[in-house]
Amino acid sequence: MIKFTILSPPRAATGTPAMDETFMRIALELAAQARQRGEVPVGAVVVLDGGVIGEGFNQPIGARDPTAHAEIVAMRAAAARIGNYRLSGAELFVTIEPCQMCVGAMVHARIARLIYAAPEPRAGAIESAMRAHEHPALNHRIQAVGGVLEAESRELMQDFFRERRASEAARSGLTNGEVPKWS
Ligand SMILES: [Zn+2]
Image (cartoon, rainbow, N blue to C red; front, side):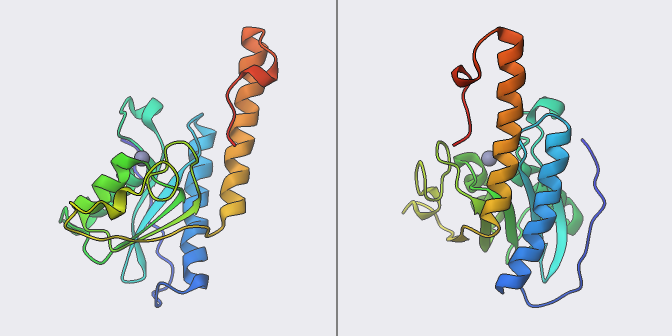
């Protein structure tokens, strides 16, 4: 597992639009690290009391781990750092709407607030494919906010998939339009 340095911005009240953007920018930097490694560019940070306690970027290919989504990597780092699998009161910032697995893990971790940038039209489990965080059987409610630095995250995804489509098309002899794309 790759180790990260912890970036800790000055402590301040969280939940303001300016603070949300500050932490989302760190998540976007992590997403860029995923892209450099050929992974779908998604980044995440866990914030507690105004400081970053866990960072992660998407790395299922490199880690040979189907669960190594940015959110899971960031929550594992945060839990190890504070010595508790429950991240009660923590906020999780992620550059793309999380999938069902990650929402489930956030419920287990008792994440208080989820902030994401761009929706994920196929598998997003907050507003797109389903609303997993609102399932009545859940014993914990996560407050979810989307659209923070949405354009930046969408551009990162579109660039990544455009490049991948071009290289796959070149390799396979398909025309660019036959390779799946990010919306
Ligand atoms: Zn996920």
